[in-house]
Length: 372
Image 1 (tube, helix red, strand yellow):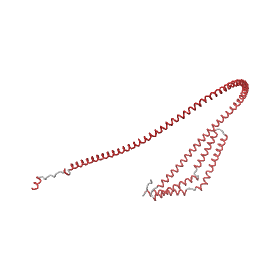
Image 2 (cartoon, rainbow, N blue to C red):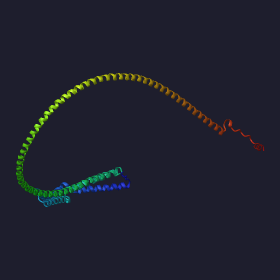
Image 3 (tube, rainbow, N blue to C red):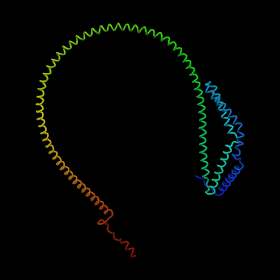
Image 4 (cartoon, rainbow, N blue to C red):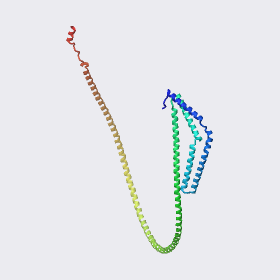
């Protein structure tokens, strides 16, 4: 909430703000023009900036050469440090220069901002007697500075992260260099092992060839022996096959005879099945007839049961109504008795009706006093 100012305090504050606005206007008139001072500032800074830029370019070239040549990590780190030093020197020169056009423009913008805020506040004080615009301008400026502070913090964090990544890059390069040396040594060792394996392979080839020839000779002998065994087995199987044929014929004759017997039994069982089916069909018809009769009797009994149930329900309803009427009459009788008792008690207590008290006769003493 904005405070309200009136009276002498309003005049004091207004005079102070008017004085500040006048001083800022005078300061704006006496400040050098940024466009006119730009050439002078560039001439002053050109020598320092050119020198620092030359150092920066030289450091970049050294770093690029060191990376392409894959030298040790010390040279790369030295080139990186030199590059950072040149960058810091350039930033310092640009930041500390009082003749920089950017600094003059910033001062001019700050002066204009202050003049605008004070003039708005003065107008609000003169019109309403409050300074809400000043608070709003301060809040906006605080938010802007907070955003700038966040940007600066993020930039610093980015620089720290870049430095950490550069250190990590140097460590990775050292590791890669060591790994490359180890791989070269391993390649030489593997070449020696390959030569040894070639010699060993030639010896093994000769040994395998001699073993293969022996195995072929042994296999031929085994095959001849197996052929003789197979011929004997073929003769034995032919004898068994003849015996199987004889057994098959006997089995076929036995099965035909058994089939005829089964056909006779099948005819007998078919006839018996038909006869049993007829008997069971007759029993089923009788059961159906009994079922229909029982169902009719059951329906008659159910009808009688429903009628009896309806009569019982009606009787119960009549009895319930009668009971309710009796209970209601009893309640009305009790209520009437209570009302009569209350009324009699009230008449007796208040001496109404036949219970009214008789008027007392006037005393003789009061009469005598009046005659005197």
